[in-house]
Length: 179
Image (cartoon, rainbow, N blue to C red; front, top):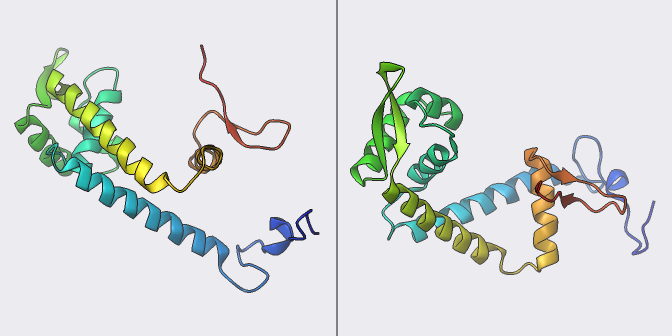
């Protein structure tokens, strides 16, 4: 079936296995492109974070601590980040040395240590967010606002983010946050 531009639709041009009619591995190519894009953003972010003195892994831990309603245990952080507990310990050591987090005893169980974000850590988070925005802006510069919206909606759908919806016109959009 052809659309108004004379192109075949995606369903007809691609088999169930992700192989195009011409034998190309479309899904494999898309996966590789996504990996290359992720590495490019990671390199750019790493470069922009160097003056802040935080690594991308430390930034990920700092963001995770900031998103927790109460100071998390290291074991909980390891589970959320899908890393071994020792990795969280090493990352926490670095964040604590910079004054961005502190270890605090759990009020209900003195044997449990929780990780708490400090005011300096909140400042580092602002720097981290700025670096991420700048890295993203650099990578996304060739795209129009409409293309960015479309990419964001597609990525939200692929990552299972809440709020990705398809209105009647068929365009995939992000739902407005609740008031």
